Length: 400
Image 1 (spheres, rainbow, N blue to C red):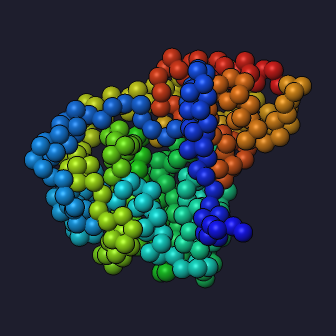
Image 2 (image 1 turned 90 degrees about the vertical axis):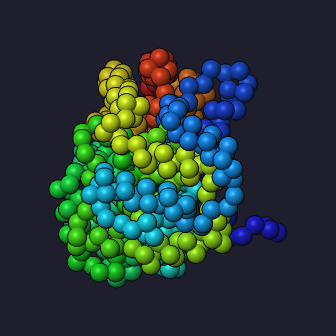
Image 3 (image 1 turned 45 degrees about the horizontal axis):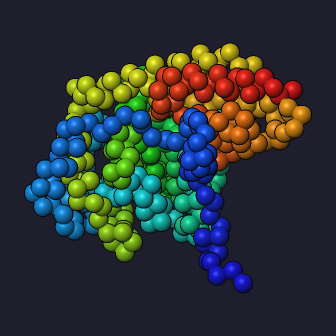
C-alpha cells in the first residue's frame, strides 16, 4: 500500500537539483567534479546588502512580517518597477514570497482550475510543468527550435489557444536558453493575448538584470493586457542573493490579495531579515551599481568563452544567448553513439556519461522540454569553464 498522495507521487524531482545533488555526492567522495548544472551566480551578495541585514538583526527586526511582505519593501519594489520598467503599481499590488518559485506557484494555484490549460513555450524552466500539475491544470507545450532562437511566435501562441486556455506562462530572459524577447516580439504576442479576454500572462522576469543587449522589456508595458499580466521577479539572480529566498509578484489587486490568502495558509511572510536586505537591493539602481555591472560583464565574457570552446567540439550546435547565464546546445549528433561500453540513447545518458566519465555536471534538456539539448550553466570561473569544456571534448571524442 502506498501511503503517499497521488499529488506528490505525480511530481518529478527537479532535474537541476538532481544533478547538483549527484555532483555533491561525487565531490564528497573526493572527485574533482565541475558543477555546470546549478542556476546560481557564483558572486557574493554585495556588502551594502549584507550590512543592511546585519543592521536589521541588531535592531531586532526579528518578528513576523505581514504575509505579503513589509510595506517598506513592497513600496520599494513598486518604485523599482517605475524606475526600471516604467510600470505603475501600488504597493498593495505587490506580494513578497519565499523566492520567485513560490511566487509562480502562488499565482498558478490562484488562477488555474482543474482542467484549465496553461500555454508554456518550450524550452521552459523545469518547475513550470510540475507547478501546473499541482494546480490540476493541463500544460500545453509550444515547441521552439534553435533556429528560431528558442522564441515562440505569435502564430504559435494563437494556434495553441482554446476555450480552456487560462494562462500563458513564459520567461524572458529565458531559463534555460538565455533567449530574450524584444519589445516588438512581445508586442506581437500581447496583441494575440488581447483578443482573448480570459487569458492571463505570468511573465517570469527573474533574470531581468542579466541582459547583454540593453534595456529589459516587460510584456506588462502594453496597455491592452496590462491588468492581465502578473510579473514575477526577485533578488536571487540580479543581486546574487539566492540563499536569501525573496521573490515577488506585481499584479492586479484581486490576484495579489488571492496570493496573500494562499500564502497566509502555507508559509506566511518571508524572513524579516531577508526582506530588509532586499529593500536595500531594490534601492540599488542597476544603471549605477558597479557590482551589478561587473557581474554582467563577467557573465558575458564567460558566455563568449563557452561558445568559443563549444565550437571546437564536433556536432555541437548552439544559438547565441543574450541573457541569463546558460547555454542550451543541441547535442543530437551524439545520440546513438557509443564508446564500446556505454551507449548514448538519450540526453540523460549524455549527461550521466559526462558526469561519470569527465566529472562534469550539466542538465538534460528533456527536463526543459527539449530532449535534443542540454543546459550548461556558465556561472563559474573561467578556469573551471576551460577545464570542463576540455574534459567534455575529450570524453565525446571517444564516442562513435
